[in-house]
Image (cartoon, rainbow, N blue to C red; front, side):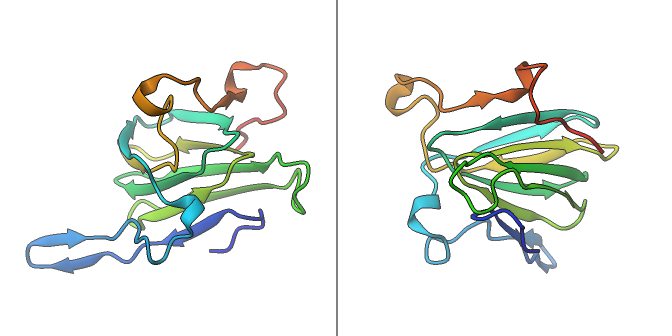
Length: 156
């Protein structure tokens, strides 16, 4: 799938199955531009109906992997004033059985919501450390979900 927002990458992942189960490659550094290569990774679980975001980062790129077990609706807004796609909004769904990687560059507001009926799993492998080295720096995040006047609303 191609995103209309400049710099956003969306890629469905092939699931390699055999008699033991399955495997999927989330990223390979020989296929990922250096600015997007991860420095850490974490796994989160979201209950049905739960949304995370919208928020954005000043310097951080996120490499999300929506693993499945549920369906996620993804919301993206280009908030980069110098971008050719400034103010563009894009919404799409990650299907339950189609693991998908989403790379979100700095300045792109993003959110996701579990629209399925069971827990959903998401891996994030950002290119910055949370709170910097030894967790000694401010968090690189602008949390729009805390602002009732925010133009970034999750509408289905």
